[in-house]
Every structure is written in C-alpha cells, then in structure tokens.
View 1 (cartoon, rainbow, N blue to C red):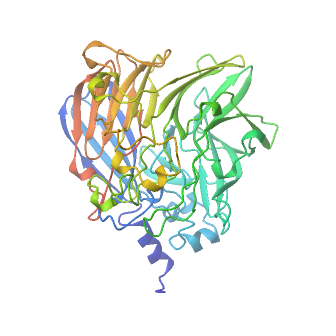
View 2 (cartoon, rainbow, N blue to C red):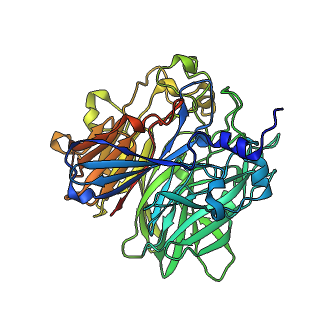
View 3 (cartoon, rainbow, N blue to C red):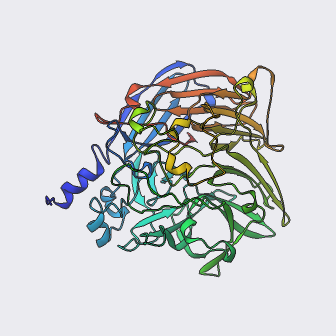
Length: 528
C-alpha cells in the first residue's frame, strides 16, 4: 500500500478548499422587505458528478453558507468549506491518538465532524450537525469561522463513530441548549450497529459552560440498534424541567460506508417513539421514560419538530413522520429493475425516498394528560389544491404560534431502491399505481392541524426548495426558501402564491470542478 504522511493523507480526505471561505454576490430580482434584514444559515453537502464515486449521503463533504440579506436590494453569500478532521481548530478540538490514527484512513471512523444537516443557534453562535454521524461543529456567525467540535464521548476501534441529536432543545429563556450524544459500535455477525454510552448534554450559550449526564433508556424501549435521535425539545410542567427526544429509530447495518453501491440486506426501522427525561441537577444519571401514545401510531422516521411551550406548563409539539428509511440512500436497482446510471435524476449516494405517505403529528400535554392528532393526505393531481404529505421535511410555527408552515419533498418512484422496498412488505407503496409527487410548501392551522384552505391558493406553493425559514408572523411576516440551483425565494407569510423577491448565483451550485451542491434540507434565520 502506498504510504502517505498524515498531513498529505488528511488533505486528501478533507477535499479541495476544506477550512477555507469565500464570498459570492447574488443577483437580486425584486425588493427585499426591511423585516428580513439578517442572515440565513444553510448546511450543504457536496456530491460527485461522477456516479461511480459513491459516498453515503451522511459521509459527504460539507459546506456551510451564510446568506446576508441587506434590504432593499443586496444579497451576498459566504461559503465555509468544513474540515471534517478538526485539525484546523487548534485548541477547539482535543484530537485523541485514535483520531490521528483513523482520520482519513479508516472508513469505520469516518470523521470528527461533517455538519450537512441540522442548524442550532444561540448567542451569536451556530452549532451545525450531521443527520447520523459525527459531532456538532460550533461556528462564530459574525466571522463565519469554526471554533470547536462538541464531542463528549471518545471513539475507539470497537466504537469508532459518534452520533447525536441533529436539532437541539432550547430552554424557555433561550439560555440553554440540550442535545443527546453517544457512541456507535461496529456491527457483528449477529447484530447491526448499536448505540452506547448515551449522554444528555446542556450548553449554556452565554458562558459556554456544559453539564453532562449519563442517560438510561426507558426499560420498555431499550433498542440499542435504534437509539438515535433526530430532534429534541424542552418544556416545563409542575415546576419541573424536561427534555423530549424524538427517537427516529434509523438502523445502520454497517458502520463503514459501502465500498461499492450494491444492494444489501436492510433491517426495517421499528416504530418511532418519544423519550422524556426530567432534568435533575442533583443526579449524575437520568432515567428516560416514554411519552404515551406515540409508538402506537406505528410511524417511522419521526424527525423534525417545532414546539409551543408558552405558559411554562406543558407543551404542544408539532412533528413529522417521514415513512422513509433514513439510515439508507438510493443505490442499486430501483423498484422497477432499472440501474441507477439509467435514471437521469439520480446522483450517487442521494438521500433515500419514502416508502409511503408521510404524516404530521400534533401532541399536546397539559397537567399530565395528552391529546394526539395526526394528518396525512395522498396526492391527487386532479385536486392539487388539497396538497399532500409525501415526505415531510421542515415544520415551523410563525411568531403568533397559530400558523404552521410545512414543506414536503414529494416522491420520485424511480428513486426507490428495490432492496429497501423489500424490507417493508405491506407498507411500501404500489409501484404500478403511484406517480411522481411534486415538492410542496403549505400553511396549516396550528390548532386544528388542517391546511388553511383559501381562495386563490394563498396557502400553498408547489416545487419549492426544501430549506425554509419563517420570519415574523402570519400578517406581517415572510417565508424564505433556498437551494443552490433554485436560489433564494421570498414570499409573504399570508400569501404563498405571491413571490416578492428572488436572488441567485451559479457559483452556489458548483462546489469545485468535480462536485456540486444538491438541495439542502434546512435553513435558519438570524436577525441583525
């Protein structure tokens, strides 16, 4: 085997431009409203144009983009290419001997950080995360420079990867953030990848102080192979503090990426659940328990959320079920027997398609009692004005907490891999009757969890980018969407049929000579 020094090998692993940043000027059409002055923060992955160069989506290189909105007519973007080794952070990451030995060499280890998914903001800082692997990266928003990696467990050869909450919980006053983090062990001949050393972490966003608790799973939901959490939320009730953790339940068959994009055995996800943990300062270990009524819904990939905790006595949680195996990605033959290189819309290692219609969840808890509502709708092209719930992604309340904005990725049947579909007999959609379902952005009544049907279609817009941010309230607010190829789009919150401004640049699409940036899943707004 050809020998390389650590510096050379890690530079190859990081990719061109890792750790650097550059500015891009966008072309603006229309006028920016004064209320959107600030920054939109986006986490983007990179993908190879060469389909033979396969990476899992979770392992793809990462760019973080800060889009600066300067009303009335200027939009700029600063692109930060992330160094996944953490070597550029100096004192901001304590690299162990195993980190130095494995980074860039061991596919099972992967990387220290690769934040292409979740975005968490507080006190002028951004904590960006991966969907499944790696520790959060902390970035100073003003300078747009990485500061440190937040890792509270140490990987080793038997447990080489870190996993944790993509979207953090925030205390009522906004001072504290809560996240879960744990280690992932190497699979065995009889068991898939499993989580261990579960921790609950609290970060003081003002001082940087941290508190770490051991976390014990609920006795009736201890599934180490499925103990991964997409989102967290915080609430208070009866004078006590709680953190909720949405167990997505993604099962990873192999901790290392596939050497080649081949079909393989897929272990189906169990039904998602929500863990609850009482935060007790006097204890070093916290015992989780299940919120009742969630597992019985039978949905999979419970993921994104928003929560109304006004009043400090209970909560109203809004969340979504993707009905998709989010631990996988599209590769191998599709449901119709087509090879990936014959499918024009496919790129190597793209995110997985759903197996069936997604659903929205409204969970209200007050005084120890709870009420559950769900909403789902198939797509009927003859009644497109009714919308659909295929593959829900973002979910966000407006400032009034009365209006809920959701977007849905839709469905491309030719991108559903055959080996994934086989793992879900009786659940997967009929490939002979289904058709393409377009992406959708739609507004709901938060209390009734029903679309706010209005004349003229002001409650929905089709074929929107997935990254979304709601600014302000229904009457005097805006909704922004973004993708590198589509650019930035701005709508009035009370009229999604009216696009008031766009901004774009081809420089955002091309990452380098060999890679492009596909549509990112998320975006957050930070006011100046």
